[in-house]
Length: 346
Image 1 (tube, helix red, strand yellow):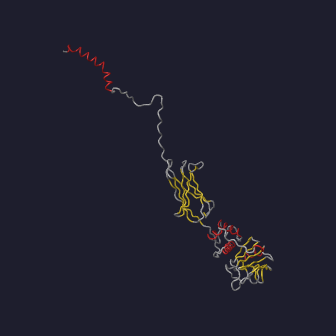
Image 2: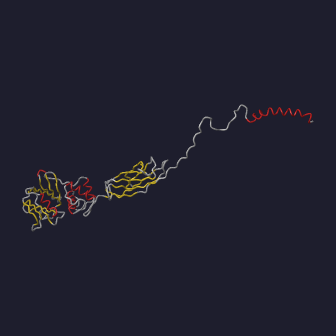
Image 3: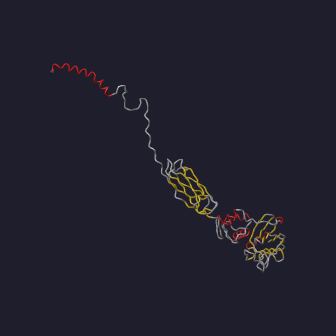
């Protein structure tokens, strides 16, 4: 059998070998389809660069301080600055600053952080002032952005104090008080010191504005000064250089025409010994101290005079004369001349 079928088997093998490659291709690729190739860059092109990882938002911190334009306490109407230091500085960031008094928000400011020269931190500045005294609370925060995380500053408290002064006080509050009183004609003492003369000026101002007759310059005194109150109203501007004694106010003014030069507190005659009223002239000047305790007397009718005296109450209490404090009597006597008019009215 081997001999009979041998040549036939050899021929069949040869024929099968001749058609195997085509048969193998038919089995791997369906008829009519295109053979696929592995993915890869197209010849002649550059592959896209790999994306860099996104940086996380920067952390941050904020600290607030108060910059004063004047040394010492912050007073009403003082301008101060809220300064915030941001670490680190990141360009394009904003800080929200809020200023409140109790539950009431007084201001809200959005401020761009600016770099501090030569440093790695940034700063914000918010100027502010208030016309009312009281405790302020200042808060500031940064809202989250893609470049920097959210953070906030510890809140800061600031006491805004009113303008008040009393005898013995010193400083810029007293200077401000004296400046305002002097502009109206009140006679004040040593600059920056609440001495006896300044106290008498405050008393005269309180009399003119019909306030309680004390020598304390409280917030109410400053409020009236701010409103322009306290001007002495000249009744007789045509009398030239003259004195006006207003018995209702218990003040004495030295006047030149319509301009008030000086205002002093005085005490006129009590009800049982009233001061004579009318228009008079200085007819006699008596220097020094007389037997009745009258100092530097300027008589305007009979025994009635403008003079210094040891006791000058805030109400009418004299025997008919116009009493002024002894320290003021010398200046008044120097100002008055014989023949000057003296106008006394209720």
